[in-house]
Length: 168
Image 1 (tube, rainbow, N blue to C red):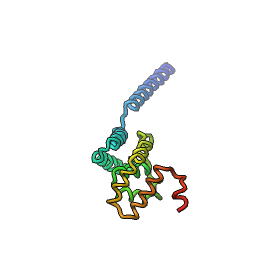
Image 2: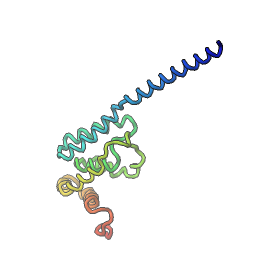
Image 3: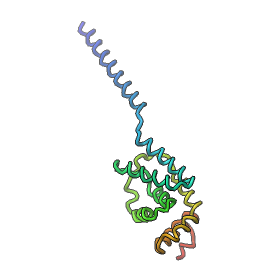
Image 4: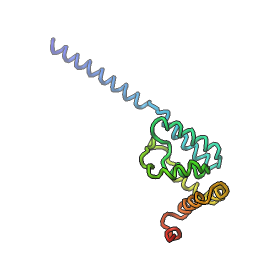
């Protein structure tokens, strides 16, 4: 009789633990991180806006995503993405702030490292629009900053290993 009670107790505990495990499994499967979804969708929309040259909307999305992720102690965009986005937006104050932060670029982490990939597409957008970016910058930037931007865009268009700037 005593062993039957023990067996029933063990069976009961086993069933409870299985039920609890199943509940946890279902909860994990149905969990949706709304902030991750927000960042990924925002990155996609930002890229789409930049490709359509809707810079006003792109700027709003960029600002919103940066403010949303700032409270989490992480960022929505990596260093190069930030650089290319602000270059496309011709937001020179932020662009040159980012340029100056190159030493600390590796110390911040993306909120969602598996975010929708936009780096390559942003690079292509900068490469394709380099001439118009320089044209606009020529009237907006002092010579020193313009020259720095010109070197950056030259590298984007021609690659890092180039003799023109290597000889200077």
